[in-house]
Image 1: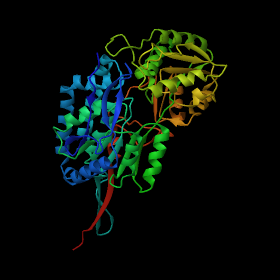
Image 2 (image 1 turned 180 degrees about the vertical axis):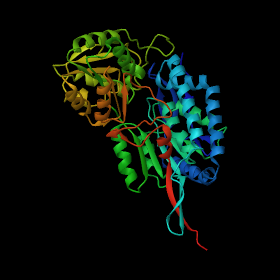
Image 3 (image 1 turned 180 degrees about the horizontal axis):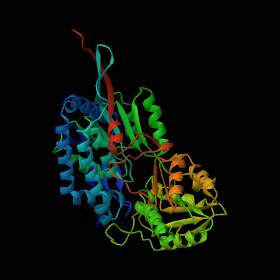
Image 4 (image 1 turned 90 degrees about the vertical axis):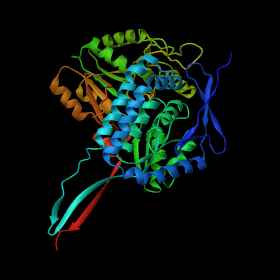
Amino acid sequence: MTTEVRRLRNYINGEFRDAADGRTIDVVSPVTEEVYATSPLSGQADVDAAMEAAAAAFPAWRDTTPAERQKALLKIADAFEERAEDLIAAESQNTGKPIGLTRSEEIPPMVDQIRFFAGAARLLEGRSAGEYMEGLTSIIRREPVGVCAQVAPWNYPMMMAVWKFAPALAAGNTVVIKPSDTTPASTVLMAEIIGQILPKGVFNVLCGDRDTGRAMVEHPTPAMASITGSVRAGMQVAESAAKDVKRVHLELGGKAPVVVFEDADIAKTVSGVSEAGFFNAGQDCTAATRVLVHESIHDEFVTALAKAAADTKTGQPDDEDVAYGPLNNANQLKQVSGFIERLPAHAKVEAGGHRVGDKGYFYAPTVVSGLKQDDEIIQNEVFGPVITVQSFTDEDQAVSYANGVEYALASSVWTQNHARAMRMSKNLDFGCVWINTHIPLVAEMPHGGFKKSGYGKDLSAYGFEDYTRIKHVMTSIED
């Protein structure tokens, strides 16, 4: 018995198309390791067509009123709710994610985020007009930047697509978005839904590989390039965009420290850390995967965390008891396994540390202790269900260890001491600091990092403003 292989297509200028030269990519299920679809391997001709469509649609979309854009985005949010089960099925096939968790943890925030940006479209703020020189009035205009080239990752294909297209469209831009070559299905389905609502050319989807993304960024048409991905990919995008001074919006890797002080509630902290570390198989830039524990509670904490890992289950998407599904692809399984295989002699695997089963890219919940600050697994992003544990002696050392990596996206502090929590939130060099929790996000608050975690903000009014430009208009008021 063979599985029917679906044929995915690009969405350009309001219609679905194969790649101009007919090339395709096999899309592999991370659960079965079988090909379940083919998608276009878009080349330069396809990129040209998509950019031409977006550029042609831009003037009319730019000139719509905020109320009209709000109405369109609200329709998209409603349509996503109506087609939720179809989106969930596509995303689960894309990624192997548990169906129940995708339904409860992804669809509601996605819809909420679209509705937030629908409202933000009508609430652009700026400094008041005024006479800053005698006889002249100055005003500020906020305008869309133009065509946006957007590249989404494979860890949250649907949600990251929303984070990109919703603020861009709300601000009056047009979009060409590329999903990862391993997870195109849900984005193509989004195009089917959105295509019933937006004018043709406003929203376009290009499937393809890294070369497709590179061609999008290098294309002369986009005014802005936005990518969520690895540090290496972000650096390449920034370098390429610099050649014609494109705006760049980068959300890159993370290595979130979780700083646990001696007065923390160990049971509550272990529960929060294990959930935030293993969710989505640890394939999250904000995942709670680098734990720093005060030496006085280190051993007790490690024992409890190892037990929590042993009690955490990975498995099939339709199993309601699983906490996460497989890693996304064969390369990612190799990367995660490699970190464990290369552990130094002083490290100790307290739980997991191995593949689960012989089919699919499943990896056991893993806890590693005995690590030093300069170890590879501390300094580099694993992007898998692996939590490391280090001990510290005092607050200064905790800050030093926490900040002693190249990433600076997210962090958390676990303590009952309010003054200490405030000091830590000041001294931690990360774009987000959670206190006695880890990983919640809301549409109203910004998400983005410092250092090699990139720049620009997703979500919030700050994320919306990233997709606008500022123009000064000065006029004489004298007769």
